[in-house]
Image (tube, rainbow, N blue to C red):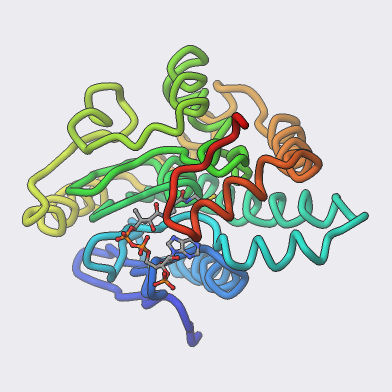
Length: 263
Ligand code: COA
């Protein structure tokens, strides 16, 4: 399988690294989603792969979230067709859900900013180990809401009170703070991220990974079905475009300014 925006490397002890390499910011557009979906298929079916690590080739960004340039373009096309935006949100949700349901352990090795969709993909993984950068659901600062499972997964991970605070304020947390509240499992020295992740992945790889896959299925059910929440999220994401807030937020982002939603 050939990929345009990621590489896959099969390392020792059955640990496979998916490394996202999509300059300038590892933003998630159609091609990256297609590559991630194909990678999930490939790594799920490959019995020699016991543990998957999601990483980034960018020096300081894990993933900068949904492709905002593509979003502006598509929201222009979507006049009178709001559910096209809901469908795009559902597409990204489905892509990340493939990581959440992959029947083997998946670790996000967060080397830098994991914002918006980057945070959502990391939350879809079983483990998050973070070196530097900031992590958070930043969509509200753009007049949007998280549309790739973030409202559901952050609430499940942190509880309603903390999730509401972080989503409303679009807060970008440093690794230590994210570790303190349980958003990441471990913050590590950035220079040690790769070796620490490898060591942890190899511990898992030496374990009963089929049992882990089955336990994962049951653990997810313990949190309750996610499907209804994802539908509501995709429709709510689309509804943001019925207000003037996304145009204010996105214009401000591209002008490198803070959005002013209050006149
Ligand atoms: N979609 C599309 N392009 C993006 C992007 C995104 N999500 N995030 C960054 N970029 C682009 C920038 O527009 C810039 O392009 P340019 O060189 O043509 O101006 C380039 O990537 C580098 O970004 P820049 O902001 O200049 O780099 P930085 O190092 O100062 O900051 C980030 C990096 C990731 C902290 C910052 O870009 C950011 O906050 N991005 C948005 C994150 C976000 O809120 N995502 C949620 C989306 S729903």
